[in-house]
Image (cartoon, rainbow, N blue to C red; front, side, top):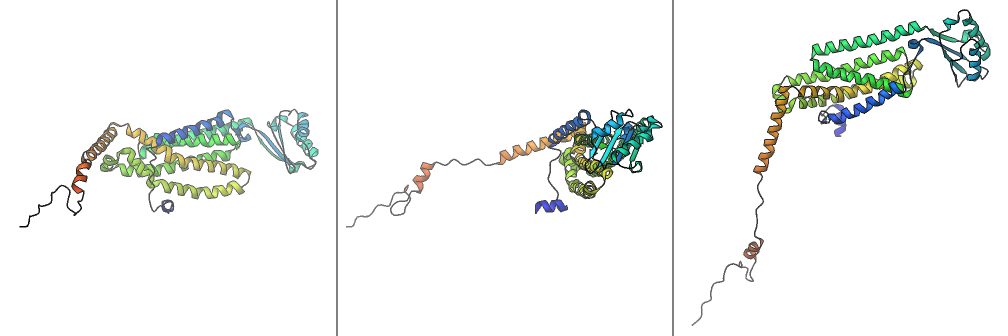
Length: 360
């Protein structure tokens, strides 16, 4: 019942997120290291929209193998093309731009269609030149940099520069983790993936700003800071907004999961990036941005003094409790048994019975 009441928001959780920040920082560091392996070690697979080239897809009614198709491509100087034969009679070819062939472009497509027993009209050809692919990559990078700069300016103007640094740390965490998982699972990076990542960063910023706004409301009260310290106020604010962040993310993940399971190829790539990004942004706003902010603020002289006073007050309270605690009484067990031992007539053993008078 306690979990259900917390989930519904009827009671606040008691998580010490800031106090356990080293544990969360270690987990985030391991997650980032694993993601960097996916980005730098395995490398991301970019679509032809970024690298340039041609993507040819057409039906196969004769059961061709990849070697058969590569032999036909070699006749036109395309020996290094990547050929995939998908079960169900579908051939996919990825090669350099066909515009370099000139008039032989049509001959190549007709030869491939004739070999597969299909018509050239049934072929799907997507051809992107290397210049166009480079422009898309450059524009995507420029858009990301502009977004990060505007975010820093907004958060610094709305709150303060240390909150902007903490928000940037969370955004960098989300960007690296999403890209790394993309590389680890081997998904292709398309323009839809870039759109999804920018959407994720906006979602992460929204969640972080909500928490920072609650922290700012509480830190206005000097009495609350004097009682709890800045880190304690951050922890209280996190507990107050924790279930809101979790429930908002769960509601967002439901339609994303539907797209991931039942969407087309393009939608699945978009949904996968959103799914990973929403999970990462929810985690980073709670366990990265706010603890980083607490670390930065606790280094300020006034908050160090507040922390020192709180620690001194707690130490004095523990000392006072030890002084007030009564000492256990020492009982002489032998004397106690002597004074309480009954006599045959029921008198205490320490008293002598009165003397009897003699009769005359």
